[in-house]
Structures are given as structure tokens and as C-alpha cells.
Amino acid sequence: MSPRPAFDALQISALDNTATLLKSVRISDEVVVGGQTDVLRIKALDDIPFGHKISIRDIHSSDSIVKYGEVIGTASRDIPAGSHVHVQNVESNRGRGDMAEQNAPASQLESCEEVFTLKVPDRPIINARSLCYRGYSRPDGSVGIRNLVGIISCVACANDVVVHLSDIEGVACFTHQQGCSQTKPDLALIAKVLTNLAKNPNLGAILYVSLGCESVPTEEIVRQAKTFGKPVEFLIIQKEGG
Image (cartoon, rainbow, N blue to C red):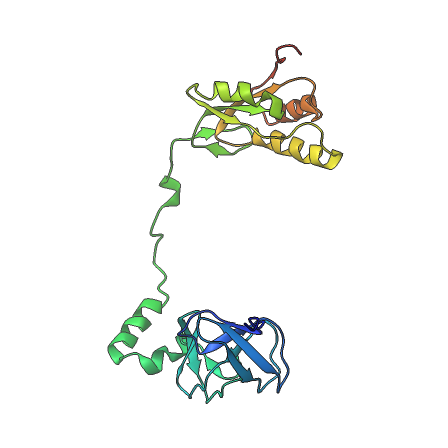
């Protein structure tokens, strides 16, 4: 049994009249096309870059160009099998605003003209100053739509305590798998994230939970969080046997 040939191009659907090249080909190269139909061998009529389309059968002018089983355009001229199928011989038929006038009936054109005519109202349609909602103003000027206590684990080893507190009504708990045995850049990044969580406008107060032995600079995180103007507390726990 002869080995299956390596494909130079792939035909995704049996409906396709184009295939996608898996490598660049030069004019006169034999292109082996595999996919949904029997293996095809066609001669390239153009230099075609990798990833571009090659016609796998003759396509006549005005015929549909089909790729992945979908019509992606219309042939603007005859395209012999083996040709490079691209902008030079394909017209898009999707979103063609320039074709609307020649294709649409007169009644539709009139409605389009009416819709797209810019009409400036004499006065504002909505008085934005009258719009409001019930929220929670924060010291930094932001406004939250909730007023929760944020409980934030400073290190993965404190996650169990934070999760235990998640059943309390009115809290939002944040855990992660970081905080120890990291490089300095990684620790700086996690410290930035833990600090900026306190800025979330939906959090009215913050409780940081720490083990006290983590590598992340917890005390600096708490100090920075307090500059946002919200109540911030710091809880140090110790694991059993620690």
C-alpha cells in the first residue's frame, strides 16, 4: 500500500472550488490537494503565497467563490484551475454599499436616503442631567453599584480562611495561587493586583488576610490600599502547628 501523499493544499468542504495552500508554490509546481474529496493534483498557474487560495477547478466569471463550504465572493473573470484566487479576480458581495444603488429597487433607495440623512434636533432628545441612579460614592470620585466588603487573600496559604468567610452576606472574596516562591518581578505584579483590587468602586471596605510569612510585601500593600480613602483592615493568621 503506497503511503498517503503529503498535502500542499487543503480543501475543507466538498463544496469548495478553492483550497488553502499549506506552503508557498511557484508557477508550474504540482500542487497536491487533500481534504474532503479524492486527492487532486493540479498545476500552479501562478506564484501563490502560503495561506492563500488556489482554484481547484475551472471557475467562470460571475460564479461563486466557495471556501469552507461558504460563498465568500464572486469571480470577476474566468479563473482556470491552479490559479491564485485573490483580490485581482474576486469581488466581495458582502457589505457592498457601493452596489446598493444598482441592486436596490427605487422604493428601497428612497427609504435608505431618508434613514441616512443627518437630522439635528432643535433641542436635546434626553436631558442627561436628569438621569441618575442609586450608587455609592467613593473617595476617589468613582461610584459603585454595590457596597461590599472585599476580603482579599494575600497568599495562597490563606485561601482556606477567605473561602470560609465567603458565606457571609455582603462580602466579596478574592483568592489566588501566588504570594510565595516567586521572582521579584512576579511578586511586584501580584502586589500591584492585590493593591488595586481595593480601588474597585463596588468595594466599600477591605480586609486583607495574611499568613505573615509570605514573600509578597503585605504591609506595603495595606499601606497603599489605605491611600484610596476606604477602611482597610489587616488580619494575620497562623496555620495550626506553624
